[in-house]
Structure formats: structure tokens, C-alpha cells
Length: 108
Image 1 (cartoon, rainbow, N blue to C red):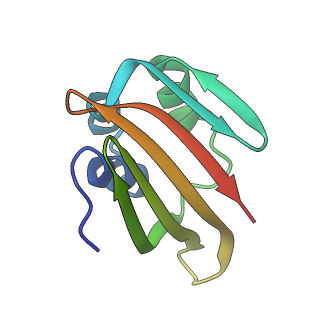
Image 2 (cartoon, one colour; image 1 turned 90 degrees about the vertical axis):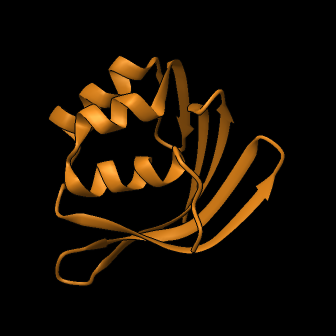
């Protein structure tokens, strides 16, 4: 799938544990809404991913990408290193000036 930067950087950074790259992909005012919580601010999100994320032995598999203006929606799944699907997701990114400003995550 053809993912535009910074969305491609977002997934690559999560999968590789490259938290400084993750930080550069996000706006300082970044907000993520997901079913279990909301992160307000780039620093709180990056800190959670680096220090509190329950599983780091995962990869994001992208199945489809949809674009509409400043929004990019990505449908995929999070897979463990032993090929177990942990969650299926749709991420809807808002991007401005080359940075992710907001992300709404839907899971099943």
C-alpha cells in the first residue's frame, strides 16, 4: 500500500520502536482518540508507546488506504511476531504541514 509520510513513519516507528521518529511524525498538539483512552499531546502519546505499551513484539499490517483531502484512513491489523492477530483496526489520520495532528482509532 502506498502510505504518504508522515503516516508511513508512524507505523514504521511503532513497529521498530523508533520513538524519536514517531515524535517527528506528530504535531506537538497531537490528539489520539481510541476506544480505551484519549491521548492529548505528542509527549504523552510517545511516552506511553515507549514506556507503557503492553506489547512491543507486534507489526502493523496495512490492508487498505483511503484518502480524502487532509484525512487518511488506514484499515489493517496488529500482528504478533508469531503471527497472531491481536486487533483489527481503522486509523483515521488528520495531517497538516507534514505532521499528524489527530488520530481516531477504531478497533474490533
